[in-house]
Length: 297
Figure 1 (tube, rainbow, N blue to C red):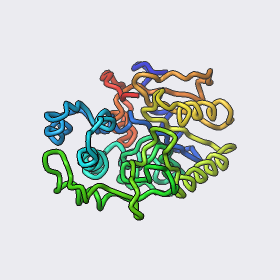
Figure 2: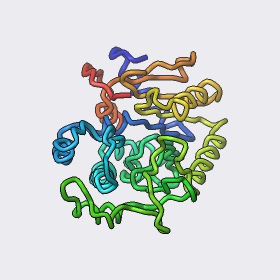
Figure 3: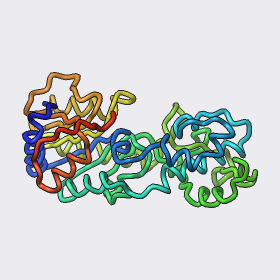
Figure 4: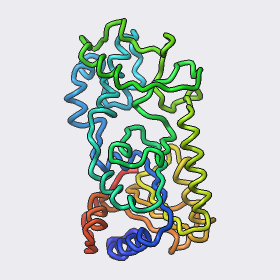
């Protein structure tokens, strides 16, 4: 199901399933953003974080989240740069725009563990996006009470120009509206805030799945590995196994296989380059692929 010999056959099957689907659910992990060109340890990171690399030895954006800064002024200076770099600075990537073009005329829904806002930037309906793990654009109370989140864009834009020697002024340390400490609204422990919007989107997603259960449902899974497989990967496999008209298409470089024994007409996997796949889907091309560059899990 993943060999280059039947690539054209798989592309043709995917086009047919998109055309015939009554409902489409997109499930996206970090591999989709990586394939789209978002690199949290590459050239752009080294250029923007050169002062932090020199001062603290930080090597990538992810590990910078856990660096034991000695002061809040240092910690929030790094977070201001971090949020800007990951959430506000990048434009919508072409892969996300192409994906929207594929499904915009369909009844679709997105569930994602990504926190970079790319679906929103690409033009997906925000009421059809369930970002289960949070969003770089949001603060929450560090104590997790009350269960509220706060947009952080205005703070980021104030803090960035005030950074000096990898610090911000004390008066710019962010707080809740009533002056309490804040944290990022990113799921890393049991203090993660699931606010009113989180629960609203969770309900919309479950309602969508319920409506689609006996219809022709196409599950498009992009770059989902095994960090949090219980959110997208395993449920998608279970839907493909349990629902009579559900089909799962998995795009994954490292883990294309299914943990369940799914019928071949209910499961197709792609390990090829996602840019090339999207080009073939949008340009009606079906030629075989020999380039084995793949999207990461």
